[in-house]
Image 1: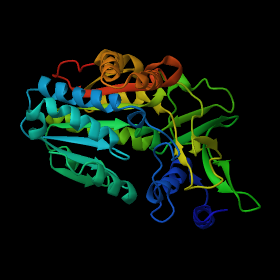
Image 2: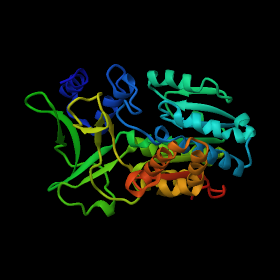
Image 3: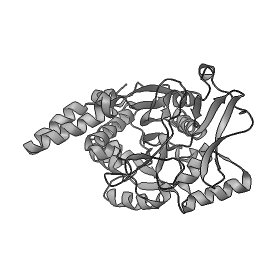
Length: 359
């Protein structure tokens, strides 16, 4: 048992089992031992590789998407560009480099990076030291950031939002909790009383043992973003692995060194995430008066934005032996058996805005 597991066990001993969402929050964000507080998890040497790290084409196209959306909404002179969980700022660097084709956009925005990891903040400062727009950081994405037209990029962010799990039993739906066994090891347990939570009708037919997974935190964040966009303009682009139709089943997973590992064995030493319920995100956004587009597959979205043409340009501009690497990266981003279908894209815009590019 590592130090964070012992800390969690002590908490359980003091107050009883905790929810899966509470476990995720501690495992990822504990200030001393939490995963995001203690390491740089991204890249070939980290625990996972994200789309911006695969190819510059990804960030470039998202930068052009922001420029086009800003233009479609009347080119507001005071706007904010936010990235949630920017990692090493590879995406933002590529996006802003490409946005130089629209000097008016760069002059109109200030950039805010929502990042709580101090190690990553230092990397971001280095990566973006030469950017033109003013740059700021925030520990969280709250309503104070939405006092003007705001454009939000959230790539692989919502999958890390804490989820709760209900399990269907003979006595009804019971919440899955984290407790410890007779040896003091962390284990999953079920609440002894039925969950006082409504399960959507279309999921009520789950078999015994079926899991209903939901994220209160994710829905709340979607509402904050959508409310700000509905009130002041702007747009949000959510890209993540997930599902577009309601269903039931467990998707919670832990990954270390790009390999699956145990969820409870060594909290703080592995990335813990869950597939994003895009239908729920869209519904939450729409309750705040915003319009949504998608979700659609990442592959279709990037193709519609022109990634095939961009790949051809890159191949022509490089030595002939670099062509295969461009094609390899392109395939990872758009092929149905790679990221093209697993990853979905959802846009949130004001109801009076034109349909965003790519949808």
